[in-house]
Image 1: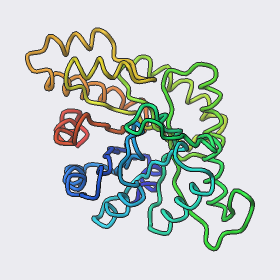
Image 2: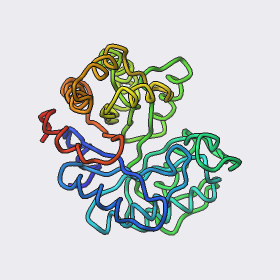
Image 3: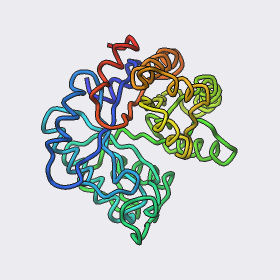
Length: 292
């Protein structure tokens, strides 16, 4: 059963994120992916995450799919104009990549190439609209394609939405996304409030859209404090104190994360694990959360 079939089946989805290599040596990426074999429904492959140059996700996805992994290719608006975005997506589809996750992308000033120019020819909502056209068999100018794409499409969202964020979320849903992936969740009560708002939108626009909650296992007080500097993420103070006071902060972080996952299981349609480092502890985390 492929990823879109699993989404439609109602199965509680588990996805996990890996980064392409910064160079041509794929051995480390393949070792990380191997840790997810048989436990993740699909592997997300990032696109120059945090504006740090890495191997193209289309190449990394193709390599991983050749090893038997189903992938979700991230694609950002930051690095390509509409011509390049369409070329990448048509090429990805021809290589058998069937799932994409759309996002704006962090500004280059946050990455390792100071002075790189951002593109942002399209925003994320416009990019979703463009993919909808490619799936219909036409390009953004209305020209007919020789073979259409058939992407399962996802978009990202914060869970703490102001009015502008809520309007943008509604626009993304209107563009026909199959799933929404949230920023990392640490406050389950606030996530519950987000789900209530999301359910209201889903009830009027599309009940078929699945919501996958982001998960970042905490490893130390330092990592928790760092995450609080990331837009859209808020680690509660009492959680940071638990990590700080723990005899083994990493074990305590796993325990806290497992409890969060257990609570989320009744609220949303799946989880997406974004580890700090590699996936060495992901299987153990899922066992602690009673998911495998």
